[in-house]
Image (cartoon, rainbow over all chains, first blue to last red; front, side):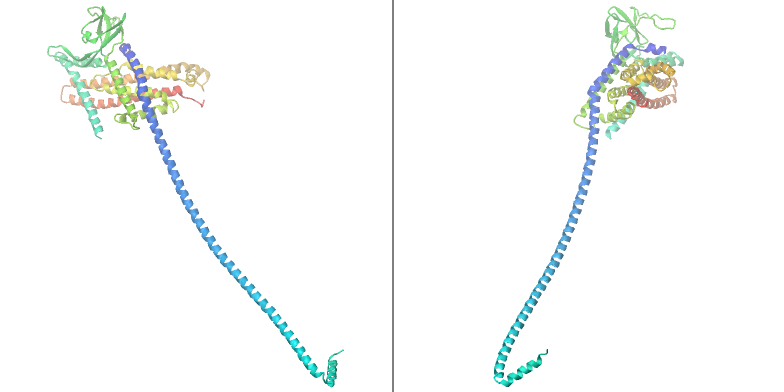
Length: 165
Length: 365
């Protein structure tokens, strides 16, 4: 210990303290600050780059998923449209068929009705004609028949016979 | 790949040079002594050499040798001596002639004794007390010694390297060149030392100190393993200065909670609070004190052991001794390389831990 104290050099202590503190301050200004800042910046840059890469990857994934979703939707839509078209076609055909059928039925019905009415008219006409004809014949017959008195009485008697009371 | 290879080769070369030149440092002085004296003196000489190495020096000497004429020759250059003794006195350390001469400045005489400057007379008389300690007056000494030179050099080196590294980030998000080696270390200090110990919220303001102290201790410890003879962190003055900074930062960033835990520990009965307060208060000083001693002791021990093992080479002068000494020194150099980083890590880690305790927010009490 004695030797230690004896060896102690105030001058060396003084210079070491002064020079060392100066060295710390100078290095701080010219070296450590710029170096540590550069290293920090770089590390932050790397972190940021990694983060943005990750984000880009996620975005890419989202985009792919989106694309797939859109494709799927489009496919579904197409299918739906096709289905709808088919249904529409079917319904149009059915409708057309129904309408045609109804129309046909109507036409037939009309035709039938026309035929019927024509028939009735024709029959009525025939009846009229027959009645007229009968009347004319009867008139002619009557004229010829009633020219004879006996025959007139005979006829009245016959008719009276037919009437039942 | 090429760079890594170069680095490996360099590291290996530094090892080899460390071991071999540290070894080469010793012989010239030792050889001369050994010619006229027995082994015991050689041991003392090695011990003295080691002790001398551990001390600071007033001139920048790479190595010394004794020439044929028996003179000591030193290879290196002198450094300025700055004394405050009735005014500022500045002169070159070459005036001391490596402790062999008395330096004169403005009518005052100074002499080197055990690597300390003492005030003396024109003849360089040193008075001793009973314990053989010099009793001469010591002037206030702010000399630029070898250690100060290395502190300045390491500081400049760090400024150069790290400001260049900071610049390389300006137009490039990735580090370039040397930054590739240092960035993982900086991130390690941030992610594994600062954030877990201090917390995400407060760690930023301590980063400058933690980074500086880590790289300063590490680089200067590594320099200590080179054959340049640097021994900065095995000076108690240096480790004290570092620990003091940690102490002051801890003390000044202590929040209400921190002081409450020191002076009035919550959750214990009141007589215990009174007993705990001085203990806790002492603890705040002991913590940085342990930092100081740990770093000092580890590096000093490493230097002593490494140099002693190299010194063995000159004691066992046979065919087993030298390779053994070399092998051991080599292995130990590897270990010291680890210790250099480990001590820097521990100092930084514990500083962070203390800062963390100062800014910690307890909600559970």
